[in-house]
Image (cartoon, rainbow, N blue to C red; front, side, top):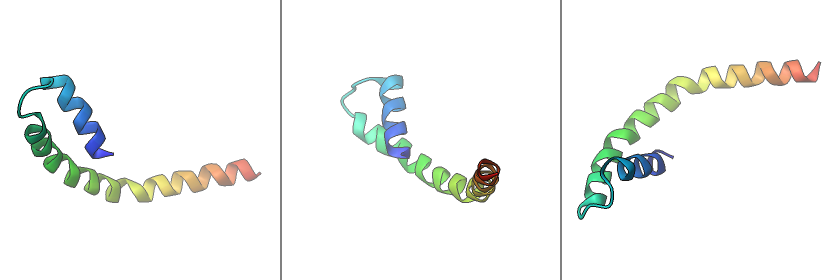
Length: 59
């Protein structure tokens, strides 16, 4: 997911320049660890919200 988002946003920002893939890789190498940390941080909350919604839908 982080790869596709950074690919799209990098392309929109700089266009089809000669060194596009090198620039995109540089951006992605920063975005990927940030995405992992966000997943680890937000997953417990998302799990609780999902469980609460499903419980409410059961009743």
